Image 1: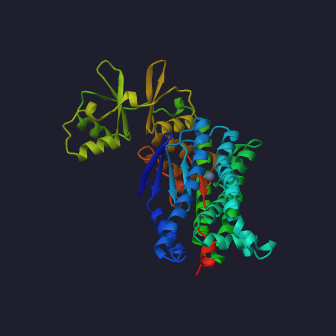
Image 2 (image 1 turned 45 degrees about the horizontal axis):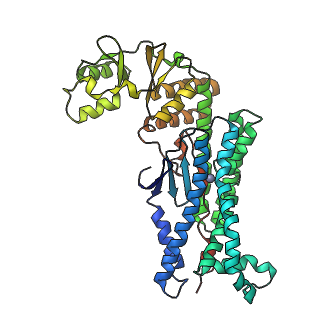
Image 3 (image 1 turned 60 degrees about the vertical axis):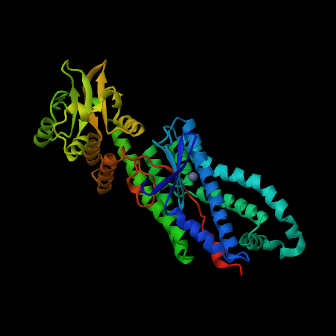
Length: 435
Ligand SMILES: [Zn+2]
């Protein structure tokens, strides 16, 4: 994602922080600056609180990511945003049961953390409790909130315990595409078609989004509003992606091949490719050597780059994608699997081969065209079309840089990530500032 800083690489997963995350650190410093006698100490404590909070969010995401990896779904990176973390899955898990476990693993991490921290919190703050800070048995929440305002090791552990419980519970709300919504869809998908399960989960999620939005307005809580927006828009994006994929499942590579595709030879100059692009509708060309072996692919974007660099005396072989970097599929592969393969290998094109013989290329543009035609034929509705356009858009940008999910990008997400939103703003700090 643009504006993200790589901070670590753990188990092959890159941990990134979005720049806007800095705003949350500033917010933490500001909120706590009045909490200690020295504002600097308070501010530093605030920063430490936020960093530890995001450590818990990261562990939540690693819960998803490592479970996904266990089921052979690659997770290239995890991004931390102010409203939570995102583990970017390269494709959706194939079985509902896998999706269920991947989705539930995040909140499970938070509950385990809370269970581990709870005895420490009780041990460190128990004395204060006995000394009469507690104003009656019903004051337990008030006491926890008052404690969380003041710097101190015991209070910090108490805060983290409570936050992990909240993180776990909040993410389990059935607000698809949040974890709880994914759990719901996975459970429904055990007994009904995946597309229908997704539709129902999205409807429930929209209801939750409306509730979040109303609460957000009532409490002047910008985080809840952002999450409501993300749930609403993200749910629609995922539904479109699932419907598109469903269309692709019934079509095989053989049917999507362009029978009249033009080809280029390694020895030819770029002018020839430019000429072909100008005079045909084709944007990608298979490249052959003089003994008619398939040796690579030349794409429009590569060609444009080469022309921009002003060296059009280059040969085709200088700028082509070598055949070894082009995934190979059989003509009997369905297009949904072809699409997955492109995402996994970050390639915009696959070569179709049967018994070693080259049959043709399939590009992301071909796939979005198939969705457009088939989607229109099957559904004939406006929503299907919107999905197709997004899908196509996504198709073009996906291989260069698999985008992370953020509220603004979520609608065009073909492989929706597992998302967790942390209710990490502290309403409590706003309500009662220590003074
Ligand atoms: Zn999660």
